[in-house]
Each structure stands twice: as C-alpha cells, then as structure tokens.
Image (tube, rainbow, N blue to C red; front, top):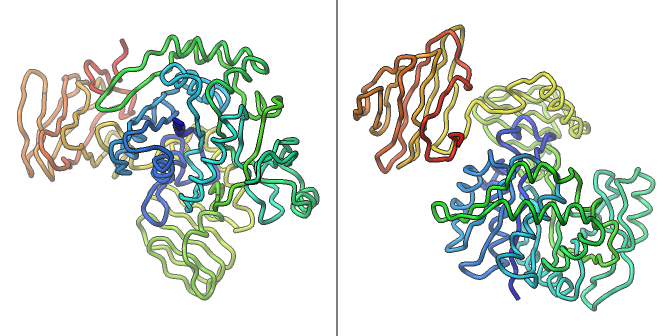
Length: 481
C-alpha cells in the first residue's frame, strides 16, 4: 500500500502575531525546542513513508524557498520533496483537489493520501503513524477518513464530529454529522455525551475515492482542478519535484473549505479517534504551555526579569523584558513590535493583525529580518534618504542581476568574500573591503565561498522602497517571462 503524506501549508496564524506574519506565517515559527512547526510536520510525514518516499507540500509560491529550506533542514534522508505552488490562497478544497489530481496522475487512483496541516503540533509521532495506518485501511475500503480528537474540555474554538455506526474493532466509525463551533453549554453537552470528537482538519483517502466523490458532490471543483493540473507540468529543480499551478486556471477554483465542499455532503465519510496528543497551537496561550512554568506559574522564552509577577508568559527574541507587579499577561517582544495582552483575551490578537492589514502596515507582512531565496536581510536602521541593512547570502547563492533607479548602495563585507558585478566590472570584495553601486548601474552579488557571506549595505536616495528594482536575470525564477 503506497501512502503519500500531503502537507497543507497556507495558514496565516494571525492569532500568533507579532511572530507569525504574512511573509513569515505560523508554520515557520520556531518552538521553544528550536524546531519549526513545518519541520515537525515533515518528521511526521517521513514516519509514514519508507526511505526514498515522496512528501508533498502545497504552499504559496512566495513561501517555496523557505519551505524547501525547512524540508532539507529536517534531515529526512533520501525522501523525495514535491512542492505544488499556489499563486494565491483558495482554501482547502482547491488545494486538496489539485494535489489529489497530481498524485493520481503520477501514482494511480489507488494511492493513499494522508493530508495534514503544517501548523499543528503532535509530539507522539508513533501514535500518529498508527492512527494513519488505521485510517489508510478504511480509505482502501472507499471511505473519506477524518481524524477526530477526543475532547478534553468543552472547547468552543473547534468544530466537532459526531460519531455514528462503528465500522471496525479499532474504533473507526461513520460520521453522523459535522458541527460548527458551538457555544459553551452545547460544548459541555458534546463532552458529556462521549459521541463527539474535535475536527482536526486532517484526512486520509485514496485518490480515486476523493475524485469520484468530488465528481458527484462538487463537480465544478473536480473539473477545474483537473484542468489546472493539465496546464501545470511538473519539473525537476535542484533535487525537488516542482509544480507551479497555472494561475488563470487556479483562480477559477472556488474559495471553499473541503468540509463545506465535500465532507458534509458525502455519505462515505468515516472518523478515526486519534490516540495521540494534538494541538493546533491556535493562540499564545497554547504555545506558552510548551514552556516549563516556575513556582509562580510564569513561563519565559528568552531574556526576562520577573518581579512580583504571576501567571504570565514572556517571549523575547532579543531584548531584555522586565515585568513588575503584573498577573495573567502575555508579553511577546520582537525586533519591531510588542504585544501585551490579558491571558484570557489572546484569541482577540487576530483583531490587531486585521487592523494592521487594513492600514497596509509593514508589521502585518514582514519582520525586520526578511527571508529571501538567497538568504536574509535585516533592516538595522532607516530614516529620510537612507537605510542600513545586514545582508546574509548563503554559500553558492546569488542575488538577481538588477538595478535601482532611485538609490545607490555601498556594500561593506564583514564576513566571507563577495563576487560582485558592478556595471561592466566584475570583482572580488574581501572581508573588511567595500564597493559602491551607483543608481542606474546593473549589479549582482554572489557568494562563491562555502560559508555565509555577511555584509552591511548602506542605501542612499530619494526613494528606498523594495519595489525600486528591475531584474534582468535571476536563478530563482523572479524575472517575468
């Protein structure tokens, strides 16, 4: 039985602002143990496939290079990475449909898919593997299987699944119905009944079953996803199987969840009770539980001094944070934004992110340190007519051949050796050396070494926006055809 894990990596995680942002979403967040949620998802996926097996990631085109870095950082041996790149977010039904179409074409309709979220935390990988194998057996019998989490409290933030007829001795059941997020009295009734499970948003099915059920209950999605895959050929790229979804075709797919489009309509849906730990890390309260508490029930990640403080979580990415005489707070400090919230109102952090988006504020989209295919840049300081950046270029990587109309740049190398194209000149710039790029000059920066290249860039000009860039050549596909 061939099982292929499919990781859906598209959530914004606005309740975890200011660490989770549009350009650096929740799956890329580092947990207290130093691993990312996406990296942990790759480890779970690898447990379902033999050495050399395929692991599929469905994500936005803008997040491809960072996702690929997390895949290879996870050291998954010789597992084959496959990426389906969305030009825009269209919810879970289109994403699952196009992934299933692509895998059916490559492996046939009997292939079993296990669809999981990139931003969930499951520590018991072996328990997850056993549940997935149980689900795969039901999937081979023609069921669309969802994973249900046994509720530990009357939670109002999750959808619920009501279990119906039992299908096997291991506890698999037909789904009687899906229920939206309930109010507190209803959630208490669900908990006491013992028939309801939390809807985890994870699924298992054969490609053939999903495509047939889509054809019956959501024929538009079935037809459009097939057209999209037909217009989106796969290609090998640096050891990765890459499939960029054709934007005009993908845009025609409706923006709808797989629950609404299919699961709530089909009569072939089963649920497997999950005998493993599970958290969607849906708020700062959930994330804080991953940090050990002190005698006052305070939890600290980073550098902090707490005086007369209780029941408080402090996370600092760099600076020292001090609290005095406070109780029941969440404090999250990043390089350019600070969140202070009452612990019982952390779900409302999404309202901050919503307002920032409405204002088109940079703090909604990006951090001070921004990931790029070639490395990172960090804005150290900026003011009228100047900006100072710290630029890190990975070994063997290169920025695009480009020019800027409105700014000049002064580059100072502080670690490594830079290979620079400046107009018609090509030169090597060593540590503690510099070069000047006038406005209007074509230029390129490359790291020919085996260690990170680190340099300071000083920009000067009348306009310093990131959109003042004209690319002529780029090894990462960022030059329009």
